[in-house]
Image 1 (tube, rainbow, N blue to C red):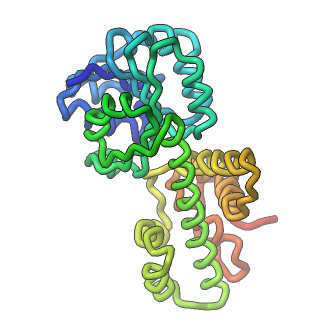
Image 2: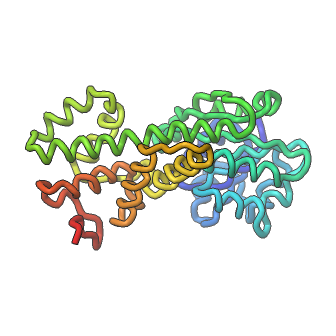
Image 3: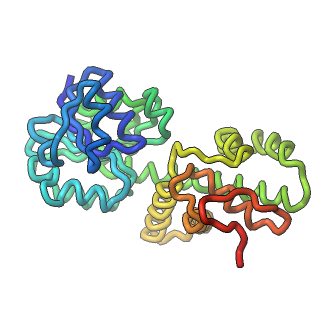
Length: 303
């Protein structure tokens, strides 16, 4: 078993760190809000007082954070992780930050520190049960070292060289954003032309966007969006997709449309809800649609 530092105990990080503990690894955790460490401490994790403290004497340091800026702060800010990382240790960066940000992180690490990108597809239920899909960018040697750890979290796929895992995650997220927006727009059209919503949902569940419809139908029907993947994170991820496309000289209109809808949902106060709340935002624009849902202090009608 391995000695692992795990930094970032949000919705995804907490169950992922718990899986590593359950697999028998020696896990040291850190989170900006120390209250988030209590449950893991009670299950046997040690608790670091700072990122630099977390990395002392471990073989692997895992970061699972919300944004590229958070990753840079934890690694290179005061008492940062990079202060104590040294030769032979491996950073496993599992946040969704994109390949460019990952490579900028890897370039700043101390000599001899391995850098592996391993973002995941899946949300809280998959993280809890060890059924995540893990996309790994790594040298062959580093991949063989990290694979036993990552297999505790789910299905592990070696995509290619460092940075390729982060790139693959953006490709996957492009489809996630497009499918949930297609769901919302199709339902808005159906509402506007007077179709029965239940019948429409039945048909859409067997359509090309069926996986999105089946996964989020209950949320839409109940107009309740308990977060398994917060909309603010989905909006950030789609912005990374759009930025990567722009850097590559691509005009991905569907990605830009998904960004626009998710940003609109953010403006309506849906950031802490599940990303499927964007469907309610789209439905609110239908002229024939009564107010479909409300978030605190939010009007769904344009002035």
